[in-house]
Image 1 (tube, rainbow, N blue to C red):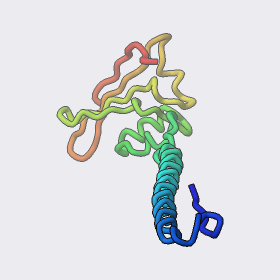
Image 2 (cartoon, rainbow, N blue to C red):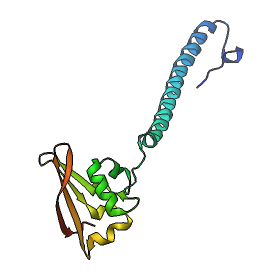
Image 3 (spheres, rainbow, N blue to C red):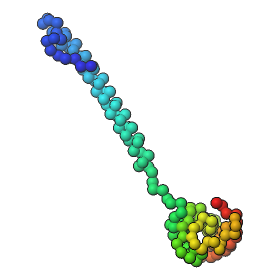
Length: 151
């Protein structure tokens, strides 16, 4: 609410001082309320804007489930074995290779591998799992076993 100051707002000259003080008090009181409301509205708008930006900023690039980099992180002995099986480019899921530090063993689940040479390593609903055991600084093929495919 805004109060206008001027001759129309005054009743007579004797009460001019009293009315002026009252108008100033009302004007200041209403001005503070309006200022607080504006600040609240601006803070609310800023909060809503910030909240709408947070989900977009927190999203990280998704890792392709069939990613060749899942193979690149393996020890060289295991990568060479996979290259011999695949006879070309290969891609793998996250569950493709698991490492057991207590057993010093890598288990390779070939059902989570995609490449051209895999047809020879599947039997109907069974897929080949291969274990590599660490011996010194190298990994040696320890076991091959057909198991029910996990997909």
